[in-house]
Image (cartoon, rainbow, N blue to C red):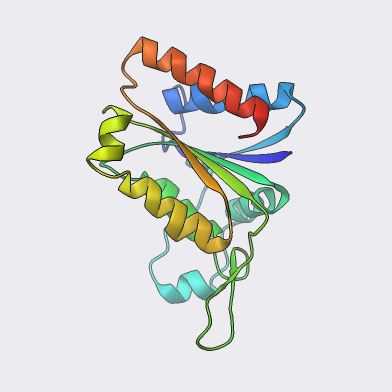
Length: 191
């Protein structure tokens, strides 16, 4: 399986738990015979979009075009990110706006029809870290931002199925150890 691992933590210095999770997934996947390419969003140079015209007709930055090539190559996308203010970090959202543009991720359709989903045939796994218990985020907040990324971004482009792994209470050493083991198992199975 060809896997594009999108490291969505916005700190380019690394060293965060998201980086450890991404590394554990990638290492386990490679050991199981899968090919993995990493897109480190924090290290890409791109501007935020400021208009619909820019999104529809502008050209993405060279770094984003390289990321698009990796996404096109992959059969499975893995997105690792921390929950910030209850949502996807702004830099990761900006990356998706740049990368998943018309002509690459979606295609125009006849008037009155839905967009064409150009990323069909790919699956995805969202690995999301948070300080609160994952159960609380699922039940009380209904995992709203994860559901939005799944439905309104990835599935909108044709990526399906999109599964998620919510990792809560990341300040706990026990929770971290357990999460690393689970992510390694996901990497081995390309899940």
